[in-house]
Picture 1: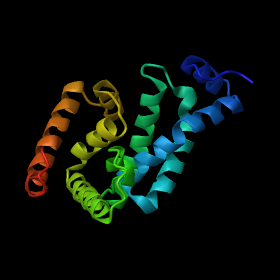
Picture 2: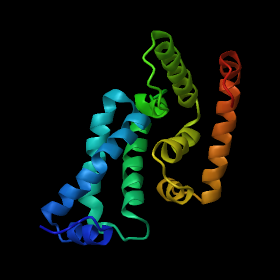
Picture 3: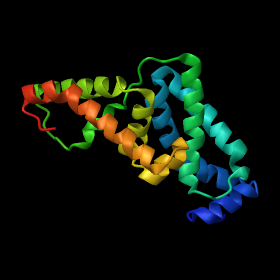
Picture 4: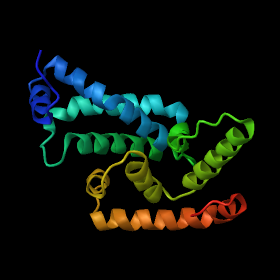
Length: 189
């Protein structure tokens, strides 16, 4: 069995049609693609969108030219599938994964603390949901998936400056929307 931990070897195995390479590709990206689909198209359509994206990725990976990292290319293909599904469905809201705010390690299981965390999650999710698609997409890629500005630009087919501008505008809108909530709860924005 070949070692596909190196991206170049993985791409070579994919181009050669090696089953193990495709299995490694799916192991690396299926959860990430599902997470993106869940954020972009919503819970009920997420599984179908992720499946469609993974099929598209597997079918077109032989055409991967290597101008970007494989991860960036995978995100771009998945993003295209999700955007197309979203255009078809004309979704109004996009739920953000429940664990977004759980990254803050808070071991408190006090009912009051849990209620505050849940309220905060809901408030932040609603604020992100209300962003225009172009701002929400860049927030999802950069902040929730951890892509760099360059990777976001590649995935969104726009210049790095546009990514930075969209993020700045998104954060400005989020600060404005969450200002009252933050002042009530003593949070700092």
